[in-house]
Image (cartoon, rainbow, N blue to C red; front, side):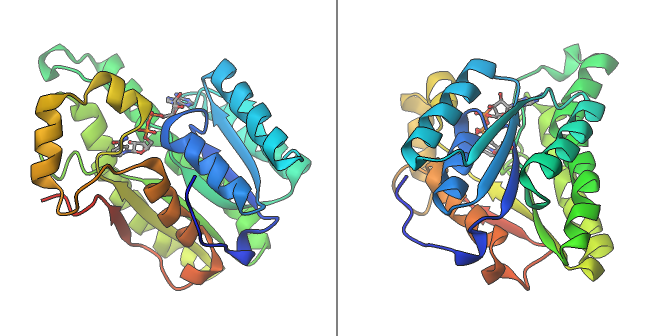
Amino acid sequence: MNLTNTYPSLQGRVVFITGGGSGIGAGLVEAFGDQGARVAFVDILEAESQALMRELNERWGEPRAHFYSCNLIDIERLQAIMAQVQQELGSISVLVNNAAQDTRHDFRDVTPEYWNERININLRPQFFAAQAVYEQMKAQGGGSIINFGSMSWHECQGNMTGYTTSKAAVLGLTRGLARDMGPDGIRVNTLTPGWVMTERQLNNWVNDDTRKVIDQSQCLAGDLMPEHICAMALFLASDDSRMCTAQDFIVDAGWI
Ligand SMILES: NC(=O)c1ccc[n+]([C@@H]2O[C@H](COP(=O)([O-])OP(=O)(O)OC[C@H]3O[C@@H](n4cnc5c(N)ncnc54)[C@H](O)[C@@H]3O)[C@@H](O)[C@H]2O)c1
Protein backbone atom coordinates (compact mmCIF):
# COMPACT_ATOMS: atom_id res chain seq x y z
CA MET A 1 0.00 0.00 0.00
CA ASN A 2 1.42 3.35 -1.10
CA LEU A 3 0.71 5.52 1.92
CA THR A 4 3.42 7.92 2.96
CA ASN A 5 2.10 9.60 6.11
CA THR A 6 2.91 8.33 9.58
CA TYR A 7 0.63 9.08 12.52
CA PRO A 8 2.52 8.60 15.79
CA SER A 9 -0.79 8.74 17.71
CA LEU A 10 -1.86 5.45 16.09
CA GLN A 11 1.19 3.54 17.30
CA GLY A 12 0.05 0.82 19.71
CA ARG A 13 -3.63 1.83 19.53
CA VAL A 14 -6.27 -0.91 19.46
CA VAL A 15 -8.33 -0.60 16.27
CA PHE A 16 -11.48 -2.66 15.62
CA ILE A 17 -12.49 -3.11 11.96
CA THR A 18 -15.64 -4.83 10.68
CA GLY A 19 -15.43 -6.64 7.35
CA GLY A 20 -11.63 -6.63 7.37
CA GLY A 21 -11.26 -9.88 5.44
CA SER A 22 -11.43 -8.47 1.91
CA GLY A 23 -11.91 -5.33 -0.17
CA ILE A 24 -11.41 -1.94 1.45
CA GLY A 25 -11.51 -3.62 4.89
CA ALA A 26 -8.42 -5.70 4.11
CA GLY A 27 -6.70 -2.47 3.07
CA LEU A 28 -7.71 -0.91 6.39
CA VAL A 29 -6.24 -3.83 8.37
CA GLU A 30 -2.96 -3.38 6.49
CA ALA A 31 -2.92 0.43 6.72
CA PHE A 32 -3.54 0.53 10.48
CA GLY A 33 -1.06 -2.30 11.09
CA ASP A 34 1.56 -0.42 9.05
CA GLN A 35 1.11 2.43 11.56
CA GLY A 36 2.00 0.07 14.41
CA ALA A 37 -1.59 -0.26 15.64
CA ARG A 38 -2.98 -3.49 17.08
CA VAL A 39 -5.78 -4.44 14.73
CA ALA A 40 -8.74 -6.68 15.57
CA PHE A 41 -11.03 -7.47 12.65
CA VAL A 42 -14.20 -9.48 12.13
CA ASP A 43 -15.57 -11.06 8.97
CA ILE A 44 -17.55 -14.03 7.69
CA LEU A 45 -14.79 -14.97 5.23
CA GLU A 46 -12.77 -17.45 7.31
CA ALA A 47 -10.12 -18.60 4.85
CA GLU A 48 -9.43 -15.16 3.33
CA SER A 49 -9.23 -13.52 6.76
CA GLN A 50 -6.89 -16.17 8.18
CA ALA A 51 -4.66 -15.88 5.10
CA LEU A 52 -4.60 -12.07 5.33
CA MET A 53 -3.73 -12.20 9.03
CA ARG A 54 -0.91 -14.70 8.45
CA GLU A 55 0.55 -12.80 5.49
CA LEU A 56 0.54 -9.40 7.21
CA ASN A 57 1.84 -10.64 10.56
CA GLU A 58 4.65 -12.43 8.78
CA ARG A 59 5.57 -9.21 6.96
CA TRP A 60 5.44 -7.18 10.19
CA GLY A 61 7.36 -9.83 12.11
CA GLU A 62 4.86 -9.62 14.97
CA PRO A 63 1.14 -10.34 15.49
CA ARG A 64 -0.46 -6.94 14.92
CA ALA A 65 -3.56 -8.29 13.10
CA HIS A 66 -6.06 -10.47 14.97
CA PHE A 67 -9.00 -12.13 13.21
CA TYR A 68 -12.25 -13.03 14.98
CA SER A 69 -14.92 -14.88 13.03
CA CYS A 70 -18.28 -13.13 13.29
CA ASN A 71 -21.44 -12.72 11.27
CA LEU A 72 -22.54 -9.18 12.13
CA ILE A 73 -26.18 -10.21 12.04
CA ASP A 74 -25.44 -11.83 15.41
CA ILE A 75 -25.17 -8.76 17.66
CA GLU A 76 -24.59 -10.80 20.82
CA ARG A 77 -21.56 -12.44 19.23
CA LEU A 78 -20.27 -9.04 18.06
CA GLN A 79 -20.62 -7.65 21.59
CA ALA A 80 -18.87 -10.70 23.08
CA ILE A 81 -15.97 -10.38 20.63
CA MET A 82 -15.55 -6.68 21.40
CA ALA A 83 -15.32 -7.51 25.11
CA GLN A 84 -12.85 -10.30 24.31
CA VAL A 85 -10.70 -7.90 22.26
CA GLN A 86 -10.52 -5.57 25.25
CA GLN A 87 -9.31 -8.47 27.41
CA GLU A 88 -6.79 -9.75 24.87
CA LEU A 89 -5.45 -6.59 23.20
CA GLY A 90 -6.54 -3.71 25.44
CA SER A 91 -9.29 -1.09 25.20
CA ILE A 92 -10.44 -0.23 21.69
CA SER A 93 -9.79 3.41 20.81
CA VAL A 94 -10.67 3.32 17.09
CA LEU A 95 -13.76 1.64 15.62
CA VAL A 96 -14.12 1.36 11.85
CA ASN A 97 -17.62 0.25 10.83
CA ASN A 98 -16.68 -0.87 7.33
CA ALA A 99 -18.61 -4.08 6.59
CA ALA A 100 -21.57 -4.00 4.23
CA GLN A 101 -23.29 -6.02 1.50
CA ASP A 102 -24.33 -4.20 -1.66
CA THR A 103 -26.30 -7.17 -3.01
CA ARG A 104 -28.60 -6.07 -5.83
CA HIS A 105 -32.38 -6.57 -5.45
CA ASP A 106 -35.52 -5.67 -7.39
CA PHE A 107 -37.79 -3.73 -5.03
CA ARG A 108 -40.80 -5.75 -6.23
CA ASP A 109 -39.33 -8.97 -4.85
CA VAL A 110 -38.24 -7.73 -1.42
CA THR A 111 -39.87 -9.59 1.50
CA PRO A 112 -39.96 -8.26 5.08
CA GLU A 113 -37.32 -10.89 5.99
CA TYR A 114 -34.98 -9.81 3.18
CA TRP A 115 -35.48 -6.13 4.05
CA ASN A 116 -34.61 -6.78 7.70
CA GLU A 117 -31.52 -8.69 6.66
CA ARG A 118 -30.27 -5.75 4.56
CA ILE A 119 -30.69 -3.38 7.51
CA ASN A 120 -29.27 -5.92 9.97
CA ILE A 121 -26.08 -6.19 7.94
CA ASN A 122 -25.67 -2.64 6.64
CA LEU A 123 -26.90 -0.48 9.52
CA ARG A 124 -27.67 -2.23 12.80
CA PRO A 125 -24.12 -3.49 13.54
CA GLN A 126 -22.73 0.04 13.14
CA PHE A 127 -24.93 1.25 16.01
CA PHE A 128 -24.30 -1.73 18.30
CA ALA A 129 -20.54 -1.73 17.70
CA ALA A 130 -20.48 1.98 18.63
CA GLN A 131 -22.56 1.26 21.73
CA ALA A 132 -20.17 -1.57 22.69
CA VAL A 133 -17.01 0.58 22.45
CA TYR A 134 -18.50 3.55 24.28
CA GLU A 135 -17.41 2.63 27.83
CA GLN A 136 -13.96 1.51 26.61
CA MET A 137 -13.41 4.82 24.81
CA LYS A 138 -14.88 6.93 27.59
CA ALA A 139 -12.50 5.37 30.12
CA GLN A 140 -9.59 6.36 27.85
CA GLY A 141 -10.82 9.96 27.59
CA GLY A 142 -11.92 9.61 23.97
CA GLY A 143 -11.80 7.67 20.75
CA SER A 144 -12.71 7.77 17.07
CA ILE A 145 -15.61 6.01 15.38
CA ILE A 146 -15.67 5.90 11.58
CA ASN A 147 -18.94 4.81 9.94
CA PHE A 148 -18.81 3.89 6.28
CA GLY A 149 -21.40 5.54 4.03
CA SER A 150 -21.76 5.35 0.26
CA MET A 151 -22.21 7.70 -2.71
CA SER A 152 -24.77 5.30 -4.21
CA TRP A 153 -27.84 6.93 -2.68
CA HIS A 154 -26.62 10.46 -3.52
CA GLU A 155 -26.70 9.47 -7.19
CA CYS A 156 -30.09 7.70 -6.99
CA GLN A 157 -28.65 4.26 -7.68
CA GLY A 158 -31.41 1.69 -8.13
CA ASN A 159 -31.70 -2.06 -7.52
CA MET A 160 -30.36 -1.87 -3.97
CA THR A 161 -32.89 0.04 -1.88
CA GLY A 162 -32.11 -1.96 1.28
CA TYR A 163 -28.47 -0.92 0.92
CA THR A 164 -29.01 2.72 -0.11
CA THR A 165 -31.55 3.23 2.69
CA SER A 166 -29.07 1.86 5.25
CA LYS A 167 -26.22 3.99 3.89
CA ALA A 168 -28.32 7.18 3.95
CA ALA A 169 -29.24 6.37 7.56
CA VAL A 170 -25.56 6.11 8.48
CA LEU A 171 -25.35 9.92 8.25
CA GLY A 172 -28.09 10.29 10.87
CA LEU A 173 -26.43 7.65 13.04
CA THR A 174 -23.14 9.54 12.87
CA ARG A 175 -24.62 12.91 13.75
CA GLY A 176 -26.78 11.61 16.60
CA LEU A 177 -23.94 9.65 18.21
CA ALA A 178 -21.49 12.53 17.69
CA ARG A 179 -23.75 14.64 19.92
CA ASP A 180 -24.24 11.89 22.52
CA MET A 181 -20.58 10.88 22.74
CA GLY A 182 -18.87 14.22 22.13
CA PRO A 183 -18.85 15.22 25.82
CA ASP A 184 -16.72 12.11 26.49
CA GLY A 185 -14.19 13.07 23.81
CA ILE A 186 -15.43 10.44 21.37
CA ARG A 187 -15.54 11.58 17.77
CA VAL A 188 -17.96 10.06 15.25
CA ASN A 189 -17.63 10.65 11.50
CA THR A 190 -18.88 9.17 8.26
CA LEU A 191 -16.39 8.19 5.57
CA THR A 192 -18.09 8.06 2.18
CA PRO A 193 -16.25 6.31 -0.64
CA GLY A 194 -16.96 6.85 -4.32
CA TRP A 195 -16.59 3.91 -6.69
CA VAL A 196 -13.59 2.01 -5.38
CA MET A 197 -11.90 -0.54 -7.61
CA THR A 198 -11.85 -3.51 -5.26
CA GLU A 199 -11.47 -6.99 -6.71
CA ARG A 200 -15.17 -7.61 -6.13
CA GLN A 201 -16.24 -4.45 -7.96
CA LEU A 202 -13.86 -5.23 -10.85
CA ASN A 203 -15.16 -8.81 -11.13
CA ASN A 204 -18.86 -7.98 -10.87
CA TRP A 205 -19.61 -4.50 -12.16
CA VAL A 206 -16.75 -2.78 -13.93
CA ASN A 207 -16.81 -3.19 -17.72
CA ASP A 208 -16.23 -0.98 -20.78
CA ASP A 209 -19.58 0.79 -20.35
CA THR A 210 -19.18 1.50 -16.63
CA ARG A 211 -15.58 2.62 -17.27
CA LYS A 212 -17.01 5.36 -19.51
CA VAL A 213 -19.38 6.42 -16.71
CA ILE A 214 -16.46 6.58 -14.27
CA ASP A 215 -14.37 8.65 -16.69
CA GLN A 216 -17.24 11.10 -17.29
CA SER A 217 -18.31 11.36 -13.64
CA GLN A 218 -15.01 11.75 -11.78
CA CYS A 219 -13.37 15.18 -11.87
CA LEU A 220 -10.06 13.43 -11.34
CA ALA A 221 -8.80 10.87 -13.82
CA GLY A 222 -7.64 7.48 -12.58
CA ASP A 223 -8.91 4.65 -10.45
CA LEU A 224 -10.14 5.22 -6.92
CA MET A 225 -8.37 2.54 -4.89
CA PRO A 226 -8.73 1.19 -1.31
CA GLU A 227 -5.56 3.05 -0.30
CA HIS A 228 -7.26 6.40 -1.02
CA ILE A 229 -10.04 5.50 1.40
CA CYS A 230 -7.54 4.15 3.95
CA ALA A 231 -5.62 7.46 3.87
CA MET A 232 -8.74 9.30 5.06
CA ALA A 233 -9.52 6.61 7.67
CA LEU A 234 -6.02 6.96 9.17
CA PHE A 235 -6.42 10.73 9.43
CA LEU A 236 -9.88 10.43 11.04
CA ALA A 237 -8.57 7.85 13.51
CA SER A 238 -5.50 9.87 14.46
CA ASP A 239 -5.25 12.69 16.95
CA ASP A 240 -4.53 15.05 14.01
CA SER A 241 -8.29 15.16 13.38
CA ARG A 242 -9.06 15.81 17.05
CA MET A 243 -11.63 18.57 16.36
CA CYS A 244 -13.41 16.77 13.51
CA THR A 245 -16.70 15.13 14.41
CA ALA A 246 -20.26 14.70 13.08
CA GLN A 247 -19.05 15.18 9.50
CA ASP A 248 -19.21 13.27 6.24
CA PHE A 249 -15.78 12.94 4.62
CA ILE A 250 -16.20 12.07 0.95
CA VAL A 251 -13.41 10.43 -1.04
CA ASP A 252 -14.80 10.01 -4.56
CA ALA A 253 -12.36 11.73 -6.93
CA GLY A 254 -15.01 14.43 -7.37
CA TRP A 255 -17.96 12.39 -8.64
CA ILE A 256 -20.43 14.73 -10.35
N1 LIG B 1 -16.20 -0.47 -3.21
C1 LIG B 1 -16.94 0.59 -3.47
O1 LIG B 1 -16.99 1.07 -4.60
C2 LIG B 1 -17.74 1.26 -2.37
C3 LIG B 1 -18.49 2.38 -2.72
C4 LIG B 1 -19.21 3.04 -1.74
C5 LIG B 1 -19.19 2.59 -0.44
N2 LIG B 1 -18.45 1.50 -0.11
C6 LIG B 1 -18.48 1.06 1.28
O2 LIG B 1 -17.18 0.75 1.73
C7 LIG B 1 -17.23 -0.35 2.64
C8 LIG B 1 -16.35 -1.48 2.14
O3 LIG B 1 -16.76 -1.79 0.82
P1 LIG B 1 -16.08 -2.95 -0.05
O4 LIG B 1 -16.27 -2.57 -1.46
O5 LIG B 1 -14.73 -3.26 0.44
O6 LIG B 1 -17.07 -4.16 0.28
P2 LIG B 1 -16.85 -5.72 0.06
O7 LIG B 1 -18.17 -6.32 -0.19
O8 LIG B 1 -15.79 -5.95 -0.95
O9 LIG B 1 -16.26 -6.18 1.48
C9 LIG B 1 -17.06 -6.11 2.62
C10 LIG B 1 -16.48 -7.04 3.67
O10 LIG B 1 -17.46 -7.15 4.70
C11 LIG B 1 -17.65 -8.53 4.98
N3 LIG B 1 -19.02 -8.78 5.42
C12 LIG B 1 -20.14 -8.68 4.68
N4 LIG B 1 -21.20 -9.05 5.39
C13 LIG B 1 -20.74 -9.41 6.62
C14 LIG B 1 -21.37 -9.90 7.79
N5 LIG B 1 -22.69 -10.13 7.83
N6 LIG B 1 -20.61 -10.14 8.87
C15 LIG B 1 -19.27 -9.94 8.83
N7 LIG B 1 -18.62 -9.48 7.74
C16 LIG B 1 -19.35 -9.23 6.64
C17 LIG B 1 -17.37 -9.24 3.66
O11 LIG B 1 -17.09 -10.62 3.83
C18 LIG B 1 -16.21 -8.45 3.12
O12 LIG B 1 -14.96 -8.94 3.59
C19 LIG B 1 -18.70 -0.74 2.74
O13 LIG B 1 -19.30 -0.11 3.83
C20 LIG B 1 -19.29 -0.21 1.44
O14 LIG B 1 -20.66 0.05 1.57
C21 LIG B 1 -17.73 0.81 -1.06
